[in-house]
Image (tube, rainbow, N blue to C red; front, side, top):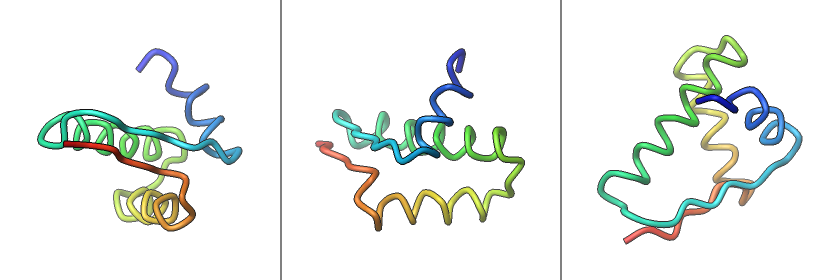
Length: 67
């Protein structure tokens, strides 16, 4: 997570995340990592970070093409 703060800054400024690949493991790992980044960079609880992730989905800013 060497670029964590830079990545989070881009997401907070309206960045869009595209996840493509393995649904069984990789997609879950990406979601978990995004969740962790939100918690660490913002000092949020797990619930607040999850609410942010759900908002990204609803706004069309988090896409998955997984199989």
